[in-house]
Amino acid sequence: MTREDKTAAIAELKEELGSAQFFYLADSSTLSVEKINKLRRMCFTQGISMKVAKNTLIQKALEDAPESKGYAALFEALAGPTTILISENPKAPAKLLEEFRKTEARPLLKAAYIDSSVYLGDDQLAVLVKLKSRDEMIGEIIGLLQSPAKRLASQITATGAKIAGIVKTLEERPA
View 1 (cartoon, rainbow, N blue to C red):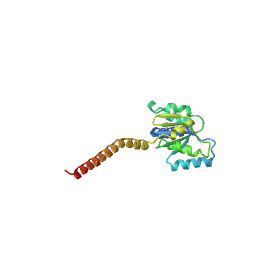
View 2 (cartoon, one colour):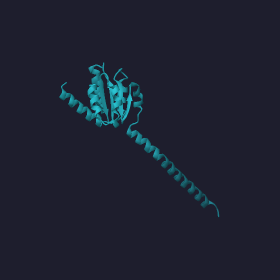
View 3 (cartoon, one colour):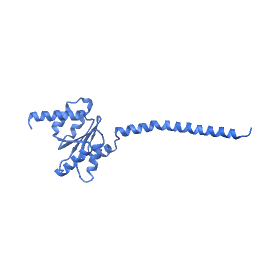
View 4 (cartoon, one colour):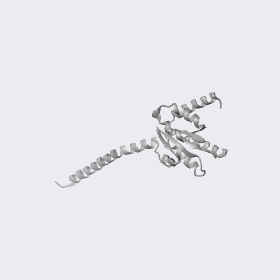
């Protein structure tokens, strides 16, 4: 790889990783070409971008980002072959890895970057699968906010029915 190729690869990685809120670093070594292609197809159908890159290029791309991003914690995971999974959904790559590993031993999760939080190690996969997506969180919040309003509405309706029953009873009573 020439110096120009490396510079171009670093710039491309910097742009992709810098604009991604969620990405995973995985080790897919020892997978056959057939299995890698199967993984790529699964990624494509689920809207996950899959890329293989050299660790030094990944690190150089991440080093130029502001410290507030928290990429420095990922550097210890950059050893051995690295596959990058980029997604708009924070738990989509975790679900994909979990599903793929039902039949295969790899890819192993090295690290995940979720909105400035870093998860290191394959043991974090179960935690990442249980993460709630933004839409799920919004749905829960809306449900919680609607709950008191629904109870109030049912109380008002029930109270109205009770009052109507009392008025009807009073009307039917002889004077």
